[in-house]
Image (cartoon, rainbow, N blue to C red; front, side, top):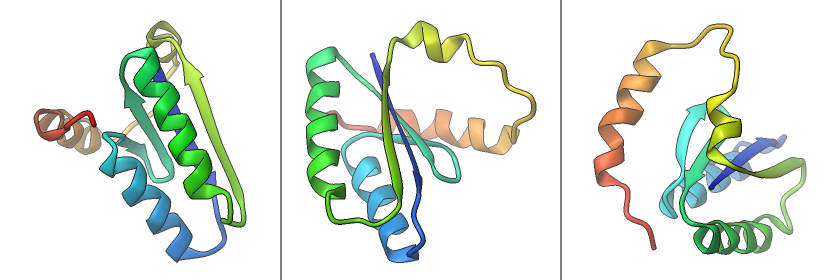
Length: 98
């Protein structure tokens, strides 16, 4: 199962906080303000609860999208930066599920 975080916050400090917090718990950046966490259902539930608490006082549009991996795999990519995909592939070995 996956959880995708997407946000549009006016304050840079809030953007940085959300990014660092989601990456700290194992999320990977896929675009500038879109991150994905991949885990078992109970891990995704924990991530959702945690991010709801962490983002409660942040102004802006913050969304979590729980989804099955097949939904993510079915995405249609119009264009992408290959550098980003290569970098994410290298980072996967360092991700620790808490």
